[in-house]
Image 1 (tube, one colour):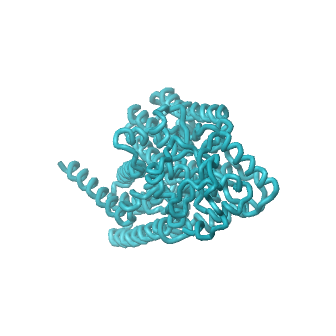
Image 2 (tube, rainbow, N blue to C red):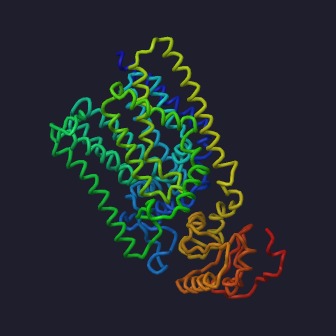
Length: 533
């Protein structure tokens, strides 16, 4: 009866905590937003994969997007490096409930909540203290980068969530030595690794612990004497599944000449000193404040130092795991260094590390046997820290959506609202278009039309002009039916577009749509009133 009451209290604390923080972060309003703000292009990549599964037939091994840059610019066939489980699952929900973008956000968010729940359970299992377990959970849910991407269109926080679940069951195995709990943990690690390759770090560490214990290099306590072969095979099976998809994705992308998704690393030794300095500058200026509240980031570093100083008072398993995660983080940073300056979400898979550092830190505090009064003061301090982190996370989250250069929704608003109007005007997702100016897939996805994009250059050269002229000829030869732009002044001033801006088919606020090839000449670029919007 006592355990039942504690379970009810546990669930109640978690639900109230998550619900309250979600309301505070304005998740209800964000849930209904289309892909926007930081890395909207990558959000649209994932959303496009899901929408194309839904619209083009549920062919799992034939992923495609709205960008027709494959097969000599005739198809959108392109495979991401991650197994497209999430995109396919969202497409299935679209089949059941219809196409609503909030479904994608809701799926990501629900899985993240479940992952946090298992982190909460894991912290409580180790610490035997609901207060400190709550602090660990809140500190992770107040990391601005996680707050932003949890309610979003990308698989990173979903993969992290499955890793949290995997670690919970692995710790259960660590305590009960049951093969069942080990295999359950491997199932969740395999899902995590399938969605993001960086999540393979966890099973790699576990394999290392198994081997170290088996070969008696040092005792890890993972009980490798019990069905060591089965455990090793289950870990290796995860690598085989992920490696099989990566090989398939590379074959698929090679077959269709697709370069839309990255399947390679850019290590630090492959770039020059100036690029290294620029990457470090970007990480510091653009992203450092979003990894954690700065004081909490340094608290995390302090937790690592305290764990080393009080090595024997921390949890035997997680002190080894933490050291392994630190080494893995360093190696990952070196291998993907050049990309870290432009991608804040690359480190999401490593938020297992701060979670475990905080758990170990609180375990050490408890083992130091503070007097009740001192422990109460410590709890009060962490209440203040938690409150500051939550407020800081809301501030950074609001900044990304409402109060900075990061979100250009107002400038691009017509693209976000044009899709229903396009259908009414006779332009459907079976038509193909050329859009200017954009480097990425966003305008095509938002309009739900397939086609190509041409981006605006700061500096024009003869080679650029020739290339864009060639591209326009190629795209029209491949069946482009409309030229669409939401920057008409730049378009009419750009010489390669001149032969194509003659037949104005329709206009939606700032968006001009021209028929290709032109069937009439009804557009006068010198008419200044026509260009106003």
